[in-house]
Length: 374
Ligand SMILES: Cc1cc2nc3c(=O)[nH]c(=O)nc-3n(C[C@H](O)[C@H](O)[C@H](O)COP(=O)(O)O)c2cc1C
Image (cartoon, rainbow, N blue to C red; front, side, top):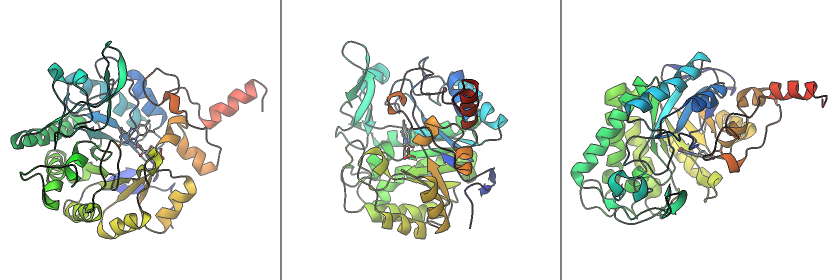
């Protein structure tokens, strides 16, 4: 049986262990959405993970739905990310960038020239983090989007390809195309929401087309072994309606992804985000349909992760919230040391507090000893 703490060959990348850190938006790039030193320190602290997937990084201003997300489209952003990738590599870690377009989950106050966000449709849904009427940062209902014209869809595909090139320039080991959580790609995949009549709407093949084109364009630029994709089948985050063709849509996607020999496919179960959980039978079906490395995130602990790996349901378990408050999560799990509970109040925005000030277990012990507590 494979231990979580043994190395894993991910399409030629040597992971020192099977523990993956989930992509997590932390909204701390307050200076022009440029990745900063504090972000580099945050990732450096967590480089014990076999693989880190960065927070969602917008591929364009159009693709941004929240203030203070570090992007991957401007030269300053590419320079900024170099601090992070260098820091992670110095500790022997690996890091992929999660390339992200939010689609309709945005607000006119953060779009260029106050334009409407774009989507597969003109139907409104979701919450964005933009400026309110008083000009203050605030959670707001997303603005009504406009449906992308067919030729514009090709331009978005090009933006993903450029983001892959930029990610490599910034020193990332690869990209994870963000096809999950109600953002642009799900707005196309979803049979109920997507009301297009061009080649990107209607049939299963057409609804999957945009995601596959963005993946293919990324592969063409940086190679399949450097491209992964995240999906969240059955997810309803940001007002995604349930639809009958869900299982068939994602199994079709699995068959298509088999042809592409990606670094990995990453499934996220939104049950951990207060949504309805993904049926476990579906995970098994996807496993049977998909031949490559499969990552899975959603409420895992060490025992459940080991069980899913042992039974062959997944290859690499992904941990999100536990990594926020346990920079040395791998060591803690390996030694069965207690975990520090995470703090949802400091997930998004703010400063160093709740971000880079969580000690490792050993630092905690030293502090206790020094102050005579332990
Ligand atoms: C603060 C926070 C930010 C997140 N940001 C992202 C993100 O940028 N991209 C993404 O795909 N998922 C995001 N997620 C979801 C996580 O990647 C992960 O799937 C989720 O937290 C479930 O894993 P967990 O139960 O181990 O925390 C975020 C979750 C949290 C808690």
